[in-house]
Length: 64
Image 1 (cartoon, rainbow, N blue to C red):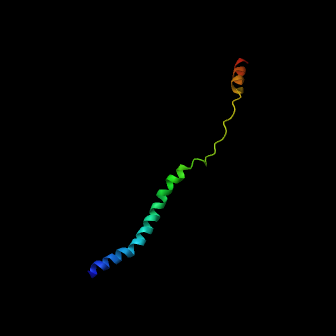
Image 2: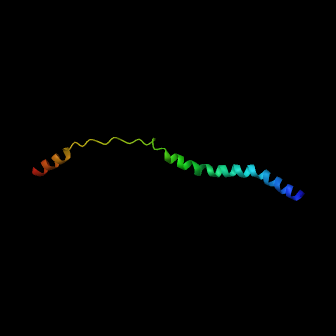
Image 3: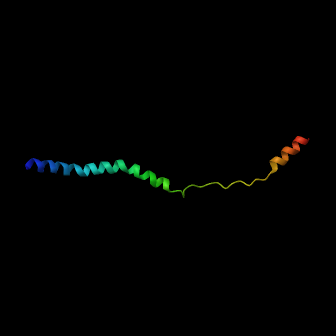
């Protein structure tokens, strides 16, 4: 009976340390989906307006 109690006490003493190590290892893995879920931080540039001057310039240079 004494051997069972000693074994249980060793296990209970190691349990907080094991939980801390598991939390430290799992934190980056659990943080990645949270970072990917935030799509509000992407800033896109406005699309430039097309003036159409390039085609006119190309045609006029080919005629001359």
